[in-house]
Structures are given as structure tokens and as C-alpha cells.
Length: 198
Image (cartoon, rainbow, N blue to C red):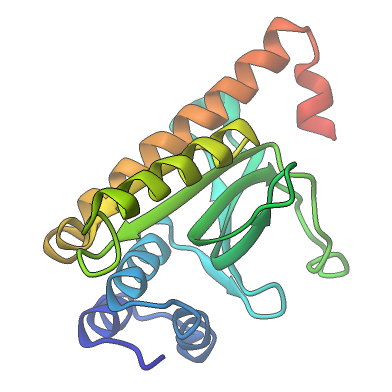
């Protein structure tokens, strides 16, 4: 898919070093509003593009000094998720938290366990909620993903187009909540050192 003008504006204003890698990632999106949101998340988090793993990634401090240096947020467009009942869903944007690893360059492709997950869906009116059947199908999908550990948040295409930065802030708040929940769980179990050291 070609990159829409508004997504291109977002990435141009950020003076990204590796525009080609970001361009390739944005081309994986299935709609212009998905591109806009992904580009905005990249700018919001000052994320780098990992071309081999086809994701954005960056250090994530969760607005909490105790989280500093612990988490990395990763973001993949058009990820296929298989649930316990063998249902396969392709989601618009898949975000997850892993432990942040200071790399010496030798382990940049290593995949770390996912500590928390979040699915982001962008609903264009031409694809979602046009009929009761479509609305019902989307809600069933959200429930099944949630039951499998993939909570979902949805934005309308209009929300993303009119104020992508506000959408990015809402996503950041949700990821922040996930990170703080993980941190508190380790603290409650007296295992914080295990999370920090790995």
C-alpha cells in the first residue's frame, strides 16, 4: 500500500534517520488511518524501526521512576494472532512489553518474552459497524482476544485522522497502565530484582 500524505507529513516532521525502514513498515498497514496512527506512535515514542522483525521498538519508562530501564515497547502492524480455540485474527496494530536489554550489538534480533499485550484497532466506517452483524462480529472478536490475554482498544478512523497525537497519548496511557501493573505484581511478590536483572 502506498503511504498516505498525512502519514508522510508525520514522519517528515520527525526527521527520522531511517525513513526507508519506516516507509516499509507503514506499507504493511491496510489503510491510511492505520499508517497515520503507526507513524504517530513512532514519533510519540521516538521509536526505532527494526526492519528484520518488522516492528517499532523503544525503551518505555511508564512515567514511573521505578520502571526506568526495565521495559521495551514493541509495535507490529498487521499481526496475526491465533487464540486457544485456533481462531486466527489479523489485528491492525499489536503492541507488547518486553524486558529492555542493553545491547552490545550482538543480540539485537533476540526475541524476549512478552510481559503484556495490547491490540489496537482502527475502525473505518466502511469496514466496521455498518450492520448489526458486523458490530456483533467485532465485539465477539474483541472478547475472544481479551479472553486470550489480548485486550483491545478501538479508535474510529475519524478520531485518528483528526487528532492522531491524542490517540497515541491514549495508547501510551494504556501501555503505561500495563507496565505499572507488571511492576506492582513483581513488587507484591518480592521479585522486583528478578524483573530488573532478568
